[in-house]
Amino acid sequence: MAPRTLYQKIWDAHVVSSREDGTSLIYIDRHLVHEVSSAQAFEGLRQAGLPVRRTDLTLAMPDHNVPTTPRVDAAGRPVPVADPASARQLAALEANVAQFGVPFFTATAPEQGIVHVVGPEQGFTLPGCTLVCGDSHTAAHGALGALAFGIGTTEVEHVLATQTLRMTRARAMEVRVEGKLGHGVSAKDVILAVIARIGVGGGIGHVIEYRGSTFAAMSIEERLTVANMSIEAGARTGLFAPDETAFAYLKGRPMAPKGEAWDRAVAHWRTLRTDEGAVFDKSVTIDAAAIAPSVTWGTNPEQVAPVTGRAPRLEDIADEARRAAVARALDYMGIAPGQALAEVAVDHVFIGSCTNSRIEDLRAAARVVQGRHLSDRIRSAIVVPGSGLVKRQAEAEGLDRVFVEAGFEWREPGCSACLGMNPDVIPPGGRCASTSNRNFVGRQGPDARTHLMSPAMAAAAGVAGRLADVREFLGEPA
Ligand SMILES: CC(C)[C@H](C(=O)O)[C@@H](O)C(=O)O
Ligand code: SF4
Image (cartoon, rainbow, N blue to C red; front, top):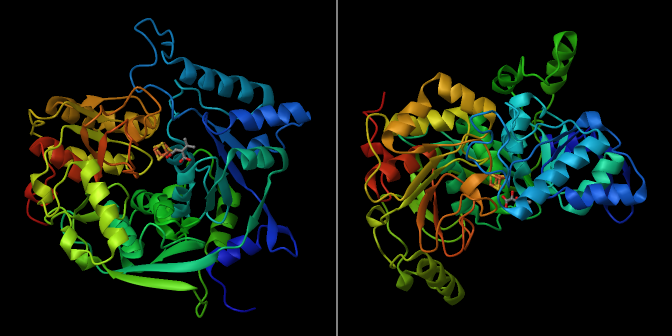
């Protein structure tokens, strides 16, 4: 057989049938469900009189709309959700999972959290599986070697009913990063550098495989950050070949295989790598040493620069359309062309989202704020763990105290200020140092301004009251 990429191998293993028109029916091994993209899908099943075909391969939880303030009162009673639209959507999910028998973590379950944090954490996400969710950041699960796609509500219904999905084959792209990352440089800086290089359309039509020594040295949590943002480069999804790091991460997780089944699974997972000589349709290589702690200055994730740098000067941009787009972005962001980024004052901090709300993210942020306090300029600063288990772990390590003593609020798990679908909204004109993945116009609230960065950088921005270089807050490199 001709040498194949990892993507081809997982795809080939899941084709149920192929059509002349180039589409294939793909078997889906795992389906994550949240409240925003599932209501119509369940309604469709109801109308067609269909059950959920494989409830055992489906897992649901609320994440987008749940408030991140306490969910039970002092007497242990659930606190009602104030926003009527959110309350309706959350109630609909609860009713649907009950009617169709779908496994469910309620808003007060210790395991509840953002689907993309909970899936890997529970061992629901496994190497070589196909995984879907009605959510664009499903690409995250590629960190464990799952072929993971964000899908629309109609497709959610199709998967619920049939456990299959009709898809066209993508092209394969290789993104290589080689070498050791510099002091204070995180996985978030790496994926922002990748997007800066290939552009927000650079991955269109492709599945990205992340390769090279820098990625091989990353933990699963760091890989989750990288794979998560594949979609921000336009890619269909992102993938890492599962390795010893992935197996060690998964071993003993509640939903991972056990005993002999584990040994068989690992033996299979070891075959899941791109063969020598397999050809990628596109390939880029980035030198790890060239990546700096970075912040976005604009309104898409490719508009990013080292924090020591400046916003672009319009006269340096030859292309007229690009110049106009940059001018519009800077105008929205309230940043002058050529302005030094470290001069930009910040008034909100958000540490959370499926990109950066895992335990390692919280540790990295806590390391920066330990013994320090938020600047007087900061109007709101929240830390939102990605799941109840992350929250509990952080509390066991005393990280909640570190954040609270520094002036942060310590919250319940959910999507929170990543997008304005719940009470955690940045006010108009507010400027937020955010560990999320999208800095689009109005993403965190109408007229709110978002600067994407790593957890350590967001912590540094909170302490400084401006965009700040985390290296000034860390000790000398070890
Ligand atoms: C609400 C949901 C469907 C949406 C998505 O598809 O990604 C959200 O998670 C986002 O990040 O914008
Ligand atoms: S945390 Fe943000 S990006 Fe992730 S699923 Fe929620 S809203 Fe989407």
